[in-house]
Image (cartoon, rainbow, N blue to C red; front, top):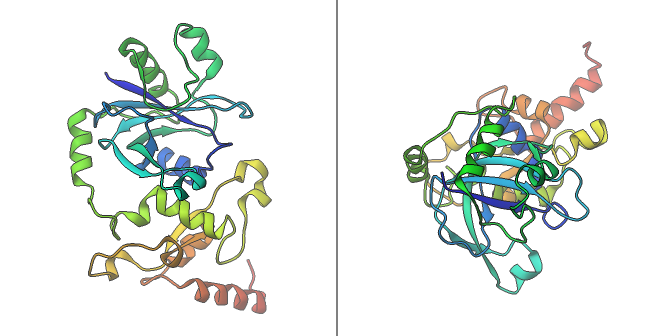
Length: 270
């Protein structure tokens, strides 16, 4: 087993659809996203990754995610907006998550106690993990409910990778973390229909959580086109998302708002 550490410092980069990602992965949906691998170019499709949350001001440090690398390395604009504006790039891999948690699956202190000779706070991603340690960590995570998942071999991951459209189109971009990220950064976390905010209602439990709705059904689009996260996507709460899809074709944002207003006007019984 070849395995590598990828790092996330939430104080330096906001993972705006993190809550949605946890929900999707815990419910068995596939979720992959590009992640910086530092300067490491030897990582291959099918290798295992561990995502570790770090940072001086970050609480609950440790491994929060695990899965498989699902692409060879490639370049993207830097995740830091200032550096991206200067034209700087980062090397990334796509990561196919099999497990992701709000709280550490294995705390940083536990890692240090179990494996004191390893550096568990690297500055960049792409640090390799010895096979014996990787197998132990992988097995520990795999057995933790509700994060139990079945293993996949390199051939399975290669088939998944080759099956992904190479162009960023309607079939991929609306489901990608990058598209959701840009949509939520623009519209923030209030529901576009009813203005519901999960954090306002549930406190920190609802922080950074919202679903994303596609304004145009993919089935209605007969040609490939590049999705615009601002024009084509909207953040919505779970209830409104379900209501939008109560008919085919789905209601528009404006139609559902009008239905809510009408229900309130009529004071319909619950």
